[in-house]
Length: 381
Ligand code: CAA
Image 1 (tube, rainbow, N blue to C red):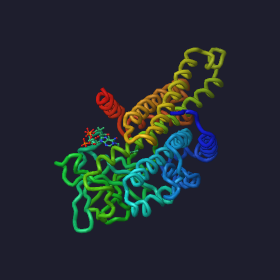
Image 2 (cartoon, helix red, strand yellow):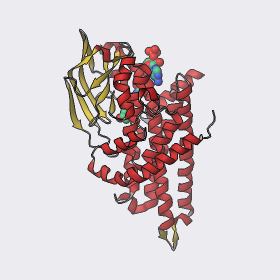
Image 3 (tube, protein in one colour):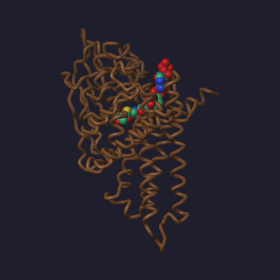
């Protein structure tokens, strides 16, 4: 594995960084306050090919590799973490499973417009009683002639407010545990799908998280992805990719915290000197920079593994675990370096601190990542 970035990857970073600085960053605080879904951000990202980054051009995507995807999500999240996760969900949690497991007809009908960014996708796995224990989901799928009827409730659905299409995981019977779970492509307009209450979140406030309620929602049988019972493995394999996106988001948030802290510590004076002259501050900055670099290398390795290996759970969980915890530490130290100013919302680090926390929770908590990692290394022994 060669970790030197190619000329194309370097150019992508420059392009996305310039776009994020010019377009996304100036709007981020206002979107954070208004909680409005940043539709125009999504449209502008679509123009740059950021909605279906790893989808082949034949299916409307940009045909990039995994490392390029990490670079782009990092740069977007450095400016606006909400836009980062909105893109990550459409790329990793919607486009990827349709591309990997969908039929040709599903790819033509659903992958193409979502990869082009003409539509927005979402992923419905979590339920009120089933978060970390995803196999315990209770949304029921009942076959009736040429369609399925889905009944249940999904929560914390990122992009749910604006999504045109959802991948919904439902079980043929809870007694079958994970072997009964199926994955369906569900359009917003299918009879029986209703949007529930929006979630009022601590951070990433404008990523449109809602409850999605299914009341005998009618889904054509051809919208089943793969075979009956394939759903849990599709969900897990999808999360292997999704967790790389969240690692990249975490690296972006942490990098922003470091940049803010570098600037502030060189301009703020105490005891007659810039606070960056004090070793107490220098060590914080050094730790932040080192951990961000380590997280980036883990994320690149995970992206490379995703491109080259059948199963990459170990690499992706390590990247997601380390990057999210490094992000939280960087955001915490960023606030600390800013002192009282870090605690008020006129300063960016206040938002970064709130945005950082979710990276340790969604797409598998840190505890779940440790579970996956320990399972993998025990299996290797
Ligand atoms: N790829 C393919 N197959 C996989 C897999 C993977 N990554 N992980 C597990 N499997 C297979 C196993 O091989 C096993 O197959 P067999 O039946 O053939 O043996 C089967 O799936 C069951 O696996 P486990 O026994 O490991 O399953 P488990 O019930 O113990 O669950 C878990 C494991 C890791 C805890 C899993 O439930 C999990 O990841 N939980 C967290 C859920 C999560 O991340 N939710 C996030 C919601 S989405 C979100 O957050 C989106 C957003 O808002 C941005």
